[in-house]
Image (tube, rainbow, N blue to C red; front, side, top):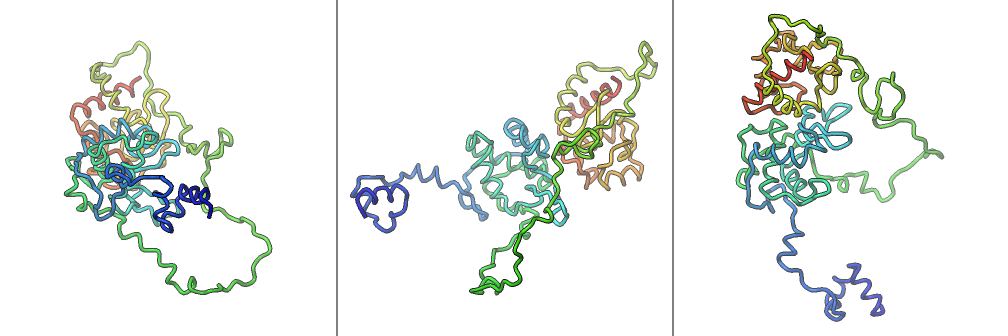
Length: 353
């Protein structure tokens, strides 16, 4: 091999093992420093090896997530556009349309920490501090109902968190099975032509027309008007009309931004991922006209007599899954009493517009 070819091979990383002295003889390269190795060796293993010192609370994680993650993954981990869903999907892995999220599919918490640290946020990877990664990981656990809202994730308690699907994976043992050990697998009666006769799943994202069942992946339910939106008669004010606290309503409108990904309210409101919220006060749970995506748990709650009022809405919005365990609503809940009061005021006011 000529000196030129050897140099080229060295740069391509092909001959370092075969000729370890070549780098010195050509004057190429130098030993990596400890700092450089540390910057490259950032993987986190299931046994916790590689985890740095640090900690992060669910509360802090919610703040960082809202600022750095929600634009792509949604306020509640529901995913926006084609960005991945991060929360929910429980008990769906055996269905025809499994939802593979951190809570339903990922086997190890180390994978969550490693991926967030290594690759997120998109376009600004490795810009998060170790404490922020701990906090976001804690918040993702909370969104998937795996920890409580006062949880703090640290290096010390990291391995105590068991992921639901940890036993759903097994080593690839195909090299040990009989069919792969055969030197010449038996292949008979091969067809002369290969044709695709079926698809693994139907995505239904191709635009068709306004009357089609799915348009850009949006259910036809989304095209329905808010039929039960309260009608406001001009010039008439009933004696029983509630007193509106304008400042509280304005605050509630800001809080409602956490809900807009799934719900709409107001004169032009339509059903989205969740039902529109016009006339929600006094409505039986799971019984909104035209909305067909309620969970069985929500329908049962309504059948058992649950009606939405100040008390029941406050309880539900504070922690949805604590009130109705198997609700489809992935929102973790509002922690502050002032936010709860504000959003109830906004829901009342917006319904009257």
